[in-house]
Image 1 (cartoon, rainbow, N blue to C red):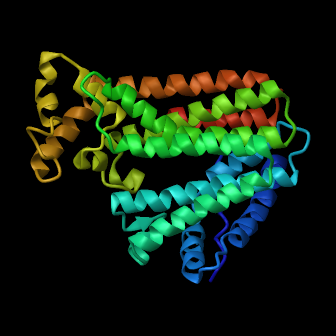
Image 2 (image 1 turned 30 degrees about the vertical axis):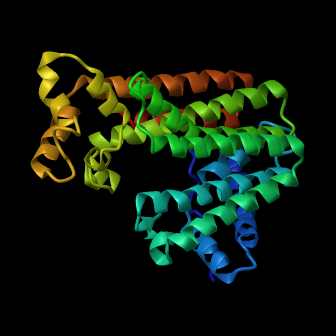
Length: 340
């Protein structure tokens, strides 16, 4: 079995070369730890876990742990590196289960575990990865155990809510935002929190970075909603309107459905699954995609993402000026720009 491939470059925009070098060196240590941690008594679980880890990925969550740790006096603390492994292992375990739910064939350009092996292997491997992340968390003390338990609850509840349609008295947009905050925002918030906490940062800095992570994590996922509609296949590497075709609710679609202007009646009709099956009707899908791209909901969605990114940047005033704060601000800017 080969070890996980180290990312070619950092997933966050780091301008300061000394900071970038420190983060690359620590991330390399995390890569080694991840491979060592992914060792089960059952060889097939070890193989499946290392297969997905070896596919690489951007390692965004462990990198955020390492960057947030620069806000404290002990960024090299062993607990910081352990926390970086915990968030990535938790993330990869959730991807295993996601792929089974979505019947996905690929993950990060490689065969998904359910495709390469089968659903049983993928589910058990995901369960084992969650167990491993819990085991590692226990070495960091009771506060880490509490944080991880709360994060895991939110993550799983987000996955569950994604499978449940909002009730007749529930706002579909609020439901979607809760799903995104649980599935994506929760673990990214914990990544920033872990880094600051275990490096010994001041409590107000830990609190600010936790909220920052929640905001940028949620905004980053919502920007994917926008890109699903706005980008072309050459730019994004995926077929435009994939979520739209599959009936996955996204921010622009929900905003468009909520509009009442008579001139947008045709789009509302196309977005109604009771009237049109966009997965089976290519012409209706193409028409809906074109109308949605021209709808004011796209600008509303972009404005929402930009607002969340700006809120995240304001929280960084709790940090001193310097390369770390600049890198975190730059990431918030990237989130805003990628949806433009």
